[in-house]
Amino acid sequence: MNRGSASHRRYNPLLDEWVLCSPGRLKRPWLGDREEVSKAALPSYDPDCYMCPRNPRAGGARNPDYRGVFLFDNDYPALTENDAPVGANPHPLLIAAPERGRCRVIAFSERHDRHLGSLPAEAVEAVIDAWASESERLTADANAAYVQIFENRGGMMGASNPHPHGQIWAVAHVPTIPRRKAERLRSYREDRSNDLLGDYLEEELRRRERIVEETDFWAQVVPFWAVWPFETMLVPKRLVGSLAELGSEERSELARLIGRTVRRYDEVFAAPFPYSMGWYERPRDGGDHRGFRLHAAYHPPLLRSASVRKFLVGYELAAEPQRDFTAEEAAERLRAIVP
Image (cartoon, rainbow, N blue to C red; front, side, top):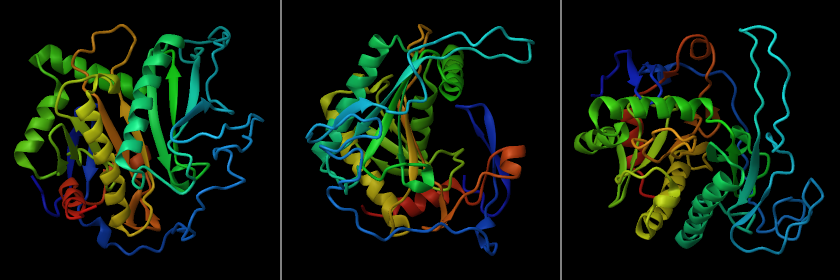
């Protein structure tokens, strides 16, 4: 399937969109922007960090002397539980609608200098357990139609604090990208009586061109339609719709795989690798989502080195996404790393 140096488009069936693949673009000279890469080692405890134990947070609350996972409401949430009306829409093309929800923060560890690649597997499994239980709790307590679990790692991806943490947002409506995925997965199941990601994973495991790692219960793959240079997905081999449905062995294996994923990324350019990671769980809006398979997507921006990132600009913003080397090349580079 590797098409060498020929430009071509690849179809993303999860979003019903195309990606332009332009192999060989990395050969062009680069005189553009370079990010500053911090070499400073983080302390195990930072008295100025609003996520470290015992410290006051920006909103005034003080953290307990916690160990391991710590969950709290975001002091500056993007959503509130108040869904006050936004007023009448003045025109059919000028539509606004209220939205409510809850924004939670999850600190992965009390240690300021740790991350999901440096925590022991049992600590990462505790994070997975917290993701699962919090998603279920928010669905019930906040009457959420969708819960988005995500992690932004590194300042390049907008992380406002280096303390190891992620976020969990519960929203009253299914957001745009999960909704598009749910529609595509439902349509595929109705047409073929199977789940799209299950069939896709089976084909990837058969071809093995884009598989980074396979375990008994999981597979990590660079999607055929990947946009970001080293984008990967974690997909369970069993059809489950949420983290809460995972068994103990599946969770333990996932914890080890997440740790290896982060360490593998860090070794690509021998530097902490920024990324944005999100879990896609089955929507809770009452629709038929029996074909929705749980999966995680990693979107790391680095392209040429630890200081040169991929920019989605120009053609990407005006027309369609584009990548500079093939998914097969990315998988080969990641697969060669033993984390």
